[in-house]
Image (cartoon, rainbow, N blue to C red):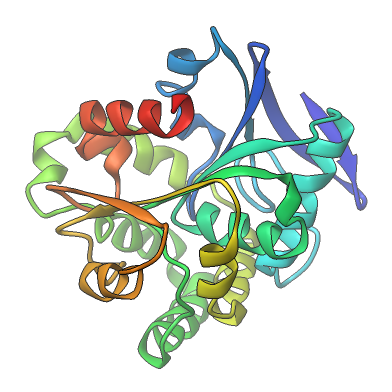
Length: 258
């Protein structure tokens, strides 16, 4: 399905009926990452998966896609579908987008799961890495994507889950350079949204990978102590839907059903 939006289109899927679940993919991903998750919940829920700006089959609308701009695009789809309340699950960048939406539309949320994601802003080192990567895009895009993507997995996972890794990499390589740059610039600009997450009503869960090189697990766990935010820690890296598939299914079901 598509929605016309700001001289472009947003691509999304809707499966099932019932209370709404919204799935937001991460950087260099698309709604295709959820294809094994959707059937687990579509019997009892309306499951909506959306291609974020500049990813999948959704077009770019500018040279910087802030998390707020992506959140506005997501909300446009949900308004179009007449969704009044939902549980959101955001993987990595999708979590940043969900938090931006939570800041503007807190009453829309029935729960929020940050999957291999964080409420923290980029530190100086991460911002510098994003800036350097964007300078490389014009001359070495394919190698840049391959390198960026490989770093998301625990070292042994790239061989253990080689077929899944190769398939996800092929999808990542379909991300247009403008989509890559615009998302990187947008992630650099995002603020710390700990207070937004802490004060949000409904169930709140963070899924953490012990070998995740992107997310500082120790810092997150320390920060959410004495809050209503729950967390679960998996054995592998940033790509829990591939590296810890069965555990992820169990905990997402707990998040959604209880």
